[in-house]
Image 1 (cartoon, one colour):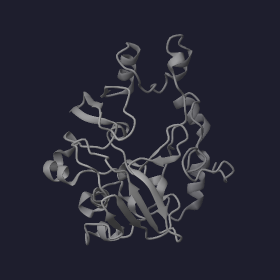
Image 2 (cartoon, rainbow, N blue to C red):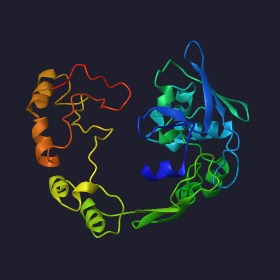
Image 3 (cartoon, rainbow, N blue to C red):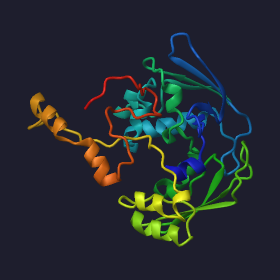
Amino acid sequence: IQVVRQIWDGLVKYDPETLEVVPAIAESWDISADNLVYTFKLKKGVKFHSGREVTAEDFIYSWSRVAYKDTASYLAYHLDPIEGYEELQEGTADTFSGMKALDKYTLEVTLRYPYGDFIKTLGHVVFYPVAKEDVEEWGDEYAEHVNGTGAFKFVEWKHDQYIELERNDDYYGNNALLEKVKYMIFADEDTAFLEFKAGTLEYTRIPIGKIQSTLDDPELGDQAIIKPSLAIYYFAMNVQIEPFKDNLALREAVNYAIDRQNIVDVLSEGVPTPATGFVPPGIPGFQEDAMKYT
């Protein structure tokens, strides 16, 4: 996802400091009084890296492609609120009935039900536009010939080695400061960390078990950045089958038996915060004073 976000922009994106939604390819948008119809005005002159201008039709094609039954995308559920989603999932339609191009630069999206966070979800990678002609030309090899809309262009993917990008000098926004970026691919975090310590990498994750020693290191400590992740990790129980089906007492017992703080202390050196709900800080819907599950 880190690589994809460099290659593409969607209608909106997230401010890196505040995580607030800000315009990207969309210049502005209006929402109907019943919160069902969203009308987006696209910026003129935004181009795919191939040089073709991005239009409203590109979003209709791209979103419909994700939701279509034969695509079998595990991310398709993000498009559930849009009118016509069920027909696409069933394979009885190939285009969202709730999406219209009012003109080249105006996109209208009608929802099946009001969804207050719809604009916020549009920053997700699943909503990025792809060029229909590229998908049709390359088919299953599209990942080797990606054609985005973002600040960096795809150069090369050496499998199990690296992905290389270069600056898009025709970007509609502020040009990136870096001319090239190379994402190195490693089999494990320990190997990547050794390369970082050797000075061959600019950034990597600190492996589990080496956080405190890294923070205490006179050379590495000042380079370390510790921040919460916008994610949670949890133990899921399948309540459709035994032994958890219709057994609330067992589910509660498993929950109470899990020592969250001990897991954090032993596996992650006390850095993460034990989760007490499904929504972590920074994600829409998080409430500091909400009931905590412990």
